[in-house]
Amino acid sequence: MPDSQSVIVLREYRLAMNAAEDEIIRRMGERWLAIERTLESNMAALANEMLLKAQAGEVVTDAMIRRSERYAILKAQMSAEIAKYNREAAGMIKAGQENALKLGIQAATDAITVTYPTALSASFNRINVAAVEAMIGKASDGSPLLELLMKDFGDAANGLVQELVNGVAQGFGAVKTASGMADGMGMGMDRALLIARTELNGAYRAGSTEQYRQSGVVEGWMRLVARDEACLACLALDGEKFDTADEMDDHPNGRCTCVPILTGMDPPEWEKAQDWFANQDEARQREIMGDKRYEMYKNGTPVEDFGIKTHDPTWGASPRIAPISELES
Image (cartoon, rainbow, N blue to C red; front, top):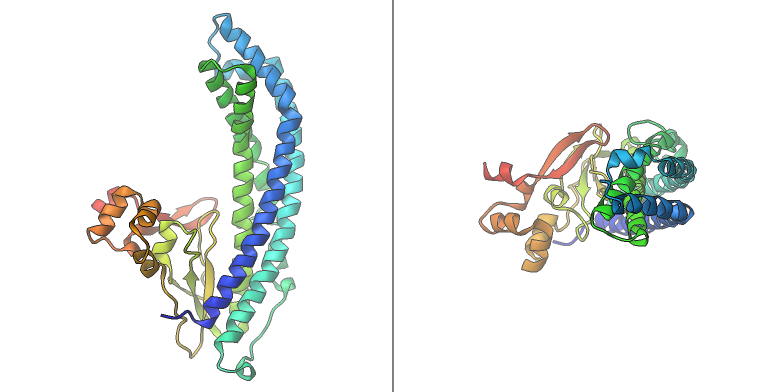
């Protein structure tokens, strides 16, 4: 079936949002690499100290590392650098949220407009960023972004120490061990990027849904999945309907968006992800599902059954891939 005009418009806006998001992620990634370069000499010194202990017959453990004076020096430096990084990251994300809200509002406005038979009949309330600007600089749970980002340090420190233990245990040299430590510290960056993607896309959806609510002509919306990059859970939920009082949930990193259902008009139509999936070749289907779920799919389990909803204390309701054990029961 051909896509409704609103779907075509929203897919174009989704690409624009992806580009804006990718640029912020690139800048955050480059800034983190600068931290790694700053800490490089102290990581190498700590790695060398622990390797010498191992060569002397000592067993290098997590606790030993954390008691080390060299680790205390590295930890203090890392804490200061990551705190600075998080302040900069919060600023980047805040600016990105404002842009995402504007883009989401404009996407919703255009999706409503193209749905009407003529431009003259498209009379509805339009909002501006001021209507939702209280969301800017905050996480989806209402807490300040910086407060959420500051928890990155624990992941970074734990990852660094674990990779140091691993490097020593495997007999790596100081340079290779220090490189692994930098990779382990990257767990903090991974968390920061997860927050950035989640909050940017949340702001984009918030702009769209608030425009729909305030328009006076929208009675609900439907989940529109970015099929080529979506997880199996989202593919299973493509086309899911929501009332205007509802928030459209998504998982961390999620890029689903909302297609409006206008009062008195037929719901929008498009090739749902379930049908799109059926038209993919076996290699692509196995890539998305994994071998076990693919075999279940070929034996008659519909795509819709592979998606469920769960509740996360941080992110709220989220689509999740149904566990195989539940599908088999």
